[in-house]
Amino acid sequence: MTTLQDLNSLREFQLEIMGIKMVIDIEKLINHVIINPDKDTPISGEFAINGPKYEIFRLLLEVILSNEEEMDNKMGYKSLDNSGFPFKLAFNTLIEHKILKEIN
Image (cartoon, rainbow, N blue to C red):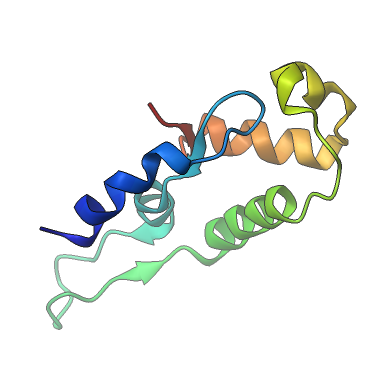
């Protein structure tokens, strides 16, 4: 049994954000910033990271995670109307790139 299977029993304790359960998809994030290795790379398993892309996604996540505004979970997405422009832009961009996603 893997660690993820052990943690599945904790899913019932997940908190809702704006009326839905959301997570950051780490695998999608990694796939967005890793540059496929060149076939001529002499070392097996070597990869590169797209620095500017990584920094943009890091900043977008920082905006989302450091947001101090109070949101009424009962109002769901309607409570997002009071959010600032940086939060809305970061939120929409992360959803568009499937890094911030709803879980079932």
